[in-house]
Image 1: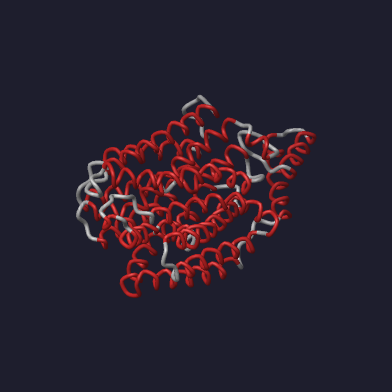
Image 2: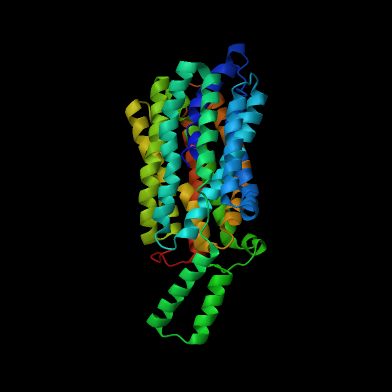
Length: 423
């Protein structure tokens, strides 16, 4: 997660450099910079390949799938170091590197819940906090490498780090073996039968259900078709595709926007790094609270707070201090989205088929993550007086988060209308 999603979360530094290098403003025609396509395609390829990677995990195993993702990510960056055109960067750092990140993400989202049946929110929060650690580390590192070795040199160096690091990590990636899961199931069922004094017939039926299906969700589904036919899936899908699009719009544009209000490029990189750093605390803390209060409940609360922060912190921000406060608030609550995706999927549909279910959620995000950065760039350059302000983009992101929050609320009501129930 540090090397995979971390490089995506720190992409705002590259966005700033590509904007300066390929901007059309010097031509005096006011056209939108084509460089925005690099980041948009990177994120879209990320989510497109979560679907493909879900099938790879089932057939090739977690370790080999992680290795493939690492090679794509590293080679994508190394080859980007030799590119001179935007379309070349779209294919390398966009498609190839984005596909690598998506492949790694699906593995990381699946493994922890197979090993641990308790405290899943906390444990997944710890694992997914790696993307925040990566953003916090890689944003300043990228800026340093660019200043020292130029933009293209920095991309090559990062590519080498990525392919070597993830190749080594892939050696230890594996889900919990079935025999260990069966043993745990038998122990849990024995405890249930002793505590509740239920009949042997019921114990036998419970054992068969748990060991053959492994579905402990609100909706007992046994196939992809059943998942797609459920209301809960579509409420969750709409919420995730909107929230994820807004999340990356904010991260990608924080350095650019910071410069737009008169801050330095170093301050912009620091703000982006702090936003990523805040996700570390947020994912672990909110994951722990989710174990106590329920995954869907925390999903709703955190995104309601993110919506308010966009409207009341980011929109009026005109100074380094306010931008830092927003970065901390945003990272703390918005960063919970990444671990909440597998957690809410487990809550709704169980552990069985988790990789495939998370991959299905990635399909909808391809469209929104492609369109949102482009729309934000239009707002930034056309409605914001060619970079003099970014209030319209803050409102745009706030509106997206508001719609995502409404969808999460609909999901919560669909599952249970009782407000104090742990879900």
